[in-house]
Image 1 (tube, rainbow, N blue to C red):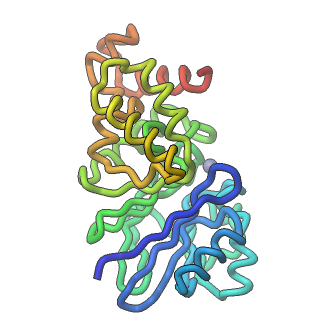
Image 2 (spheres, rainbow, N blue to C red):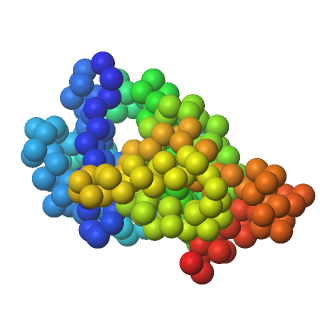
Length: 255
Ligand SMILES: [Zn+2]
């Protein structure tokens, strides 16, 4: 049976997600930004927490881990390169490893840049991806511990996922990201359509994620640094894509 998900806000603009295998009842939290909303989601669904899959070590993704571990005795899976910075880790994973939540299988994709050991989880059978703070809807994470070339290569790995993959990211930043993206590609029709859709969702008090990979490829400027017309419009024709990416990221930092 297909995986079930439940998305909910945590803290100010973080997203928590529960991922459930209907066959076994196994349920994973993707990151643990805050205990109370995660427990509220568990209560509302009646799901039983068995696992926490961590994307990276930042406190707004890990603050809830210890308390949930103490209460539910759940397994904590975390990126090997950041395990020492994450509480209560049971298992560490690297590129290409498989993580099971009941009968669901997720592939580990190393996506460093935002942090040096950031990972994403991709479920091929369900075409679901949990990408933490690497890719946002119409945006990407700040390059904090890595460098732009590293981040660009991580985004290329995510861009290679099927177009109909549903992307779950760690924050609700979509409207601000769209405002910036319009300064990079003002004539992008997919972006304009996405803005209308996101406005409607926000007006209805609904999340703007998950988003589809195909739509991100068409409208997210951070995934489009190798589009020649985009590079040219930034005065960077012929430059390596990661340099174009670095320029877009710099402009966003100043926006
Ligand atoms: Zn982060």
